[in-house]
Image (cartoon, rainbow, N blue to C red):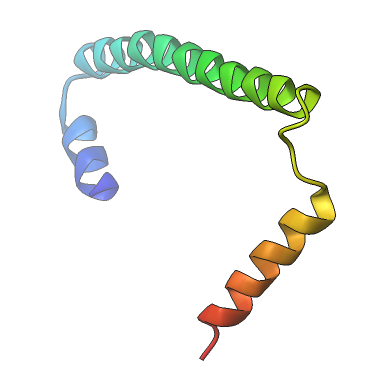
Length: 74
């Protein structure tokens, strides 16, 4: 799909290409900022959870996921 989009964009006049690229950048920045805020919230919630004693030791988490990976293997 990206190749087709590139083909369409290159067929447009240069000024139109620049306007489209500028608009894409305008839209991408707020989305990236929203995602960063979302991740910061998740990290903060995890830190509070660990501080409250609700966390699990890393070794337990790794053992749990190692068992899951082993169960998925044929």
